[in-house]
Length: 355
Image (tube, rainbow, N blue to C red; front, side):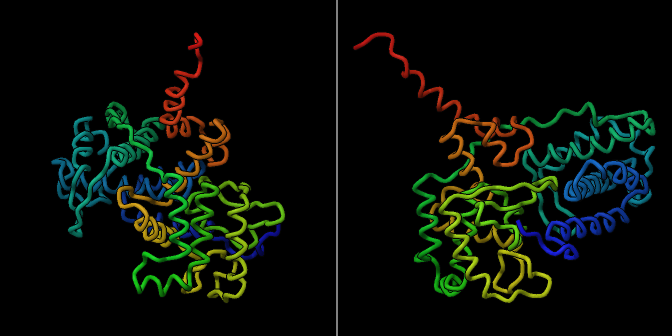
């Protein structure tokens, strides 16, 4: 498969570089010991994960300054590592309560779901665990705070009829507003390619926008993508996806991209590489024309593909591999409802007596 020029920075490398600079910028506003922690976790975490950690931990420190008497009126950079030992489990539990609803310094309201609260507690735990294992603190209150209980959420996915209706709508654009239809004539072929690719391969939206022209191999019907975690793999596509990609490839060859975006496959109207947010808006626009009862996102299209693949093959390990799940238990958890449905159908499969 052809490779992009070696001296050109890829989309994923650009993201890593941007996140690295952002991390340094935020760390400059944090306590000095924070840098030791982030330096230590760098080999085993992605830049995106570290960005999430730094925002979560900064929020924790801001909460302490705002609400905890011991930290009251301190500057965030004045917090010392030994100050963390002064906290008890109840202090961290108060933080979890705060996360359910708070107003930030800029006046914006924020809420967190059970999953969001769990992630933010995990960030604080990771910070405490590191310094506790290094024997730099003697007290680890975060380790005894219970994780929020996650309630099972129904997997939202498109039905077969809804998938067909969605693709028809992308192709025809009959339900779009007048102004949307003006853009639709310019982006229809691209939009069909994006939606068909997401629905036909189950790739993540970040993987989709990161595709370069030279990553697509029509001869072997494969696309080189960079998975979550940074490793590269090849995903394969079927006839419907191939047709949509070929149609857009012909159009893409006629577009002269903005400098720096020459390799990008999916381009915006501004002739730049499309971003994750642009694809999210695109999916929301078309999906809203098909169903207003389901909140459809690119990830829901991924769930739709995973569900269909599992129903067709019954092979959970294949689904995990194709979707790029490192742990098959992640896949099992997502598609457990389908297993239950299959078991229910099996209840009358074996006849003990002839009627």
